[in-house]
Length: 107
Image (cartoon, rainbow, N blue to C red; front, side, top):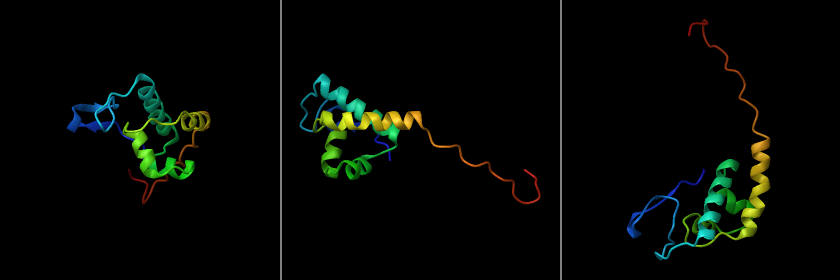
């Protein structure tokens, strides 16, 4: 599952990339950029919070905090994901096999 944009109406945050953490404090520019990059990298790899948690050995709660902006994602995690995403971009999956007609050949 690919993470979706955060909606946090309870603190006045519109749907989209979080600019405030769970306490209502503004995220600094670097934290927003890291969060945006994390979400983009996970989308390329087709990972969600659970897959990132399993692969990185980080608790799922912590990964969810990164994705909702409550905690800043460590730079080492983003640096680790970059080559994985590059590999996925450079080596897309093969196309699915052609579908065969069923029955008497009528469409």
